[in-house]
Amino acid sequence: MNKRFVSVAVLAAAISTPTVAQMSVEDQIETRQAAYQFASWNMGKIKAQTVDGSAAFDQNQVAAAAKAIAAVANSGMSVLYSRDSANDRAENTRLKPNFFEEPMKVQEIAVSFVREANALQELAAAGDQAAIARQFAKVGETCKACHDNFRAK
Amino acid sequence: MNKRFVSVAVLAAAISTPTVAQMSVEDQIETRQAAYQFASWNMGKIKAQTVDGSAAFDQNQVAAAAKAIAAVANSGMSVLYSRDSANDRAENTRLKPNFFEEPMKVQEIAVSFVREANALQELAAAGDQAAIARQFAKVGETCKACHDNFRAK
Image 1 (cartoon, rainbow over the protein chains, first blue to last red):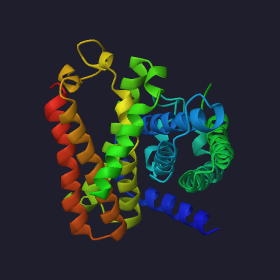
Image 2: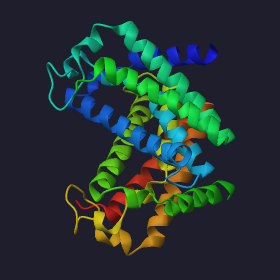
Image 3: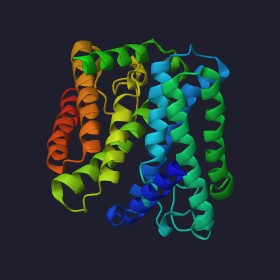
C-alpha cells in the first residue's frame, strides 16, 4: 500500500508541474515515445536474459535495466499527455481519445505500471532469475493493458 | 574510486552483451536517441526547478528525474554504437566516425557521465537544491564533452 501511495503521490506531483504547458504537443509525443522506447529496450534485455535465455544472465545488466524501466515508470509521464496529443488531433501518435475519457482507468494502469516496475527493480537487485522472469511478465501485463485500452492498432 | 570502478564494470559488462549483434543500425540509432531524449527531458525538469526557478522545486520530481538520468547513464548504451552507426555510414545520426578512433576518450567521457549522474541521483535524494544545481552543471558538462567531441554540428 505504501508503494501504491507513493506511486499516486508521484503521479499527482507530475500532474501539478507546469512542464506540460511548456511543451508542444509534438514534443510531448516525441518525449513519451522516447521514454517507452528506452523502457522497451531495457525490457528486451531482461527478457533475453531471464525469459528467452537468448543472452547470458548478467545481474548487473538486469538490475540496471530494471532501474531504467522503474525510472521511466516513476518519471511523471502524465504531463506528456495533453488532450491535443491524441490521434484525433495530433499526428505521429496512436494515442486514442478515450485515454482522456477514462481517467480512473488510466490512473489504475499507470499506478500498476509503477508498482510492478518498482517490484521488478527490487527483484532484479536481489538476483533471483526465476523471480525476475515472473515479475517481468507482470510489468509486461501493465504495458499491454495500456496498449489494449488506449493505443490504436 | 569505488563508484568509478562500478561504472567501468558496468560499461565492460555492457560491451560483453550480444545485444548489439541483434539490433539493426537503425534500431541502435533510434534507441540511443530515445535514451538521450528521455534523459534530456529529465535534465530539463531539474534545470527548471533548481537552476532557472521557472518551476517550483519539488523534491519528489527532482529525485525521480535524477534517477532517470542515472538510469540512462548506467544502461550500457555502448552496445548501441556499432561502427556502421556513425554518420559516414548511416543516416539520421550526427555521430562522427572519430568516436571509434578515440575509444579512451569515449570511455573517459562515458565514465564521467555515469559518475556525475550517480552523484546527481544521490544529491537529489538528499534534497539540497543548491547542491543539486551545482551537480546538474557537472552532468551537463559530460553531455557537452561528448557532443563537442563526437556529435556533428
